[in-house]
Length: 66
Image (cartoon, rainbow, N blue to C red; front, side):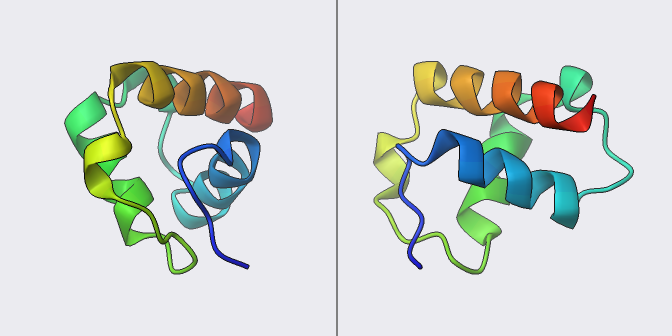
């Protein structure tokens, strides 16, 4: 499976698994962008990871973490 920026929910699930000690409420977007790019299944243009999509990923991550 190849992850794209539109796969917000699956990205959030993988972040929960790969960053277990991280509270997503306090993650800055620079780190979040890098962490998404580092996910093994992620394969999309890094330039498409703008503020809106990062906000959506962060919100989904917060939901998954709860």
